[in-house]
Image (tube, rainbow, N blue to C red; front, top):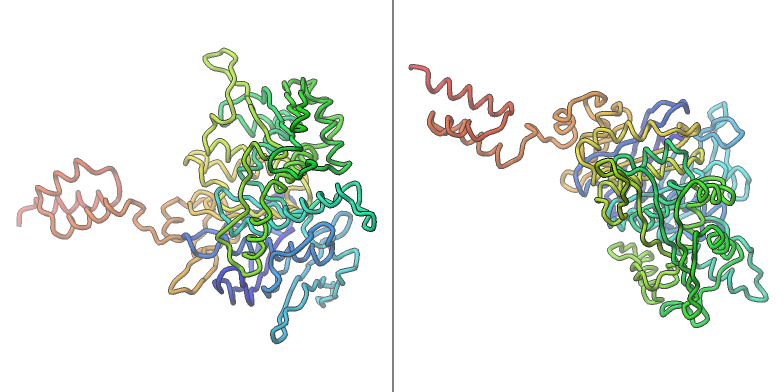
Length: 524
């Protein structure tokens, strides 16, 4: 999948900031390698809002074509046109257009058209088989913090799935429900889902992939972990949380695979402990084909944690969605009230040549984030998946940031080139590894948003040039030091400048000061 055109007529989700925006992007059309599109710019320039709108567009399209998979739309008012290329499994690549327009006060439905060989647009109805086949197979969102803007459509998707599970587990006689509730197409990976991603990868990913995910933290392997599944507690319905046959099957599988387990009948709680070795992996591999399948099993049970959220909070969020107010989010249930949670996750490592273990909670934010991002891409191998990543390297140290793009592009996956990646950043590290065609600079001046490619070639450019082109930071030094040196250049005498030079680190501006000192010391 390659997104190459977007026009926003009206985007109600961001106060009109994106209204009138038109983007055309030219990137490699081959499917041999990943070609991320990097959005860079200052805070408040609209990068996250654009990611949110794109997620909402495809959520709405999936809701239009398959309501059983995306139960609702978080945005029924924005009008737009988006074009992209996609090659559904077994078919040739085609160009697809999704659009929604307004007639008077009425906003129409999402409409799809495919470009013919003659260049004409041929409509695809919502009931046609090709409608959903022409959509990204998954929309995977990631946020490094509490970005409620980007998270909103994913929370709506998650809540709809949890509701369907609840209804399927308690079917009414006049409304039969399926044993397996269809998967949703939007997946949010954030801190609350990190362990689902990490444990699934460290159990079923290939050895090389497992090493790549945790080697940066000096870890060798997953040593052990605990799962707690509790179906009857203070926040649960009076008769407990009822499971569908699918979810009940997962619980029974986990019980069979656990090294040991205990059941508390009072809380209907299962405490499952796993000591990880090759036999453990073989057991999980017998029940789950891939790490992504195992992640889905963990995640589906974890989605039931939404059932512990008070009804008042759900109604508040729905009201906020309806009125386009996004300052709030669904509260995170306490661990004691969750249907599913991980505990006591430990890793193997070497300390001075001796075997040791390290608890998960001892990892830094950067170590968590590195493992999570690489874990997402290692696990999600679906062709034509769309990844929407908001600041995926925000907690990295500079060395890891320099290596981030290389690590991402180096992950093994034959279908990687057919996936689409949109990511935001505030740092120059990612753009330096991408050609200018894959970089968009966001600028907001006097309330007006402008978006376009940088004026320089970014691939291989120095960080100084990227900072200047994208943030107008020139010279690339802190403001306090810059102001002091500028003051000395204008008004400093020889003695003041000579003293300052002993207190300043190397920079071009320091060289200017040294030159100024030589001028002052020259005889008239």
